[in-house]
Image (cartoon, rainbow, N blue to C red; front, side, top):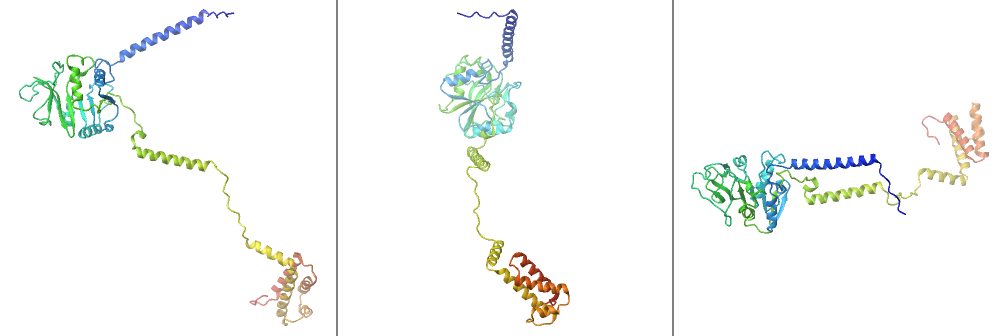
Length: 396
């Protein structure tokens, strides 16, 4: 039996329909805003497929078998050799990235080392500063007073140049006799090429010739290919500089430092990690110091006292202490060392000292040889010594 479908209430259906309509309207508005935000000016970027971009120029070179790529880093990261297509952005292009002095120095160093720079556009400020020996632009008398000499590259019969500017050649420029004019009319030079160090600079003043909306007219495609390829080999890359047009790949410190330094840093960090782990996590039983079995002086005294106690040393110690004290008392009373205990006791005048004298001998002769009697006998002998020992004399 097939279960009946749940009927959607009118309120839920209305809300769902309104939500779908709102999403459709927002999508249409977003597409319209994206089209409105698309650039209407010439970007001269190989990413731009609009009329003012160079996407067709880029794909033309790729179709002809050249190894084409886009360069989206600072000039310091240019690899030696190859061709770099640099299209000067318009002054009011909001996406352009200003070129620093370091970028200019790196670009000049790259060309001097053997790179081929294809410069499209003009920058009179850079020309006055002597950057890459670029020529300045002019609108009349661009042949420097010389005779007009139209020039067209081989295979190019028809090129309609729309720009009114031409390259200024002749006196007052840094271009020497090795400069070769690639394209010119009666008004002046449009494209020139000249050596710069071990490399070469090719400059085209009219950027509109290579735009998407005009590269298919006449012989512009043939001219564009010959302008970039020239006598370069098929294995040399042709890169379009997109950094100046706002397309730049962010670089991190690990992608900038030399690779040996990065490897050494990783090894050091791994060693530190292992060291910290070994210090924090116990990988085995604790290492205990070896037990010491050597004896101390206290152990020696205890052992000696135990030995003496087993050998009857208490009785001997009491006897020696009593005899030594008796000799001291006899000398103090003026008697000989051989005087008897009765003679010594008779000479003692103080009753308490006499009692202590006889008690000392009684403990030594008849007392039980234990620690209590030992302490008692020694204490009595010490007391008698203090009373009868002569000052400064050795006590035995």
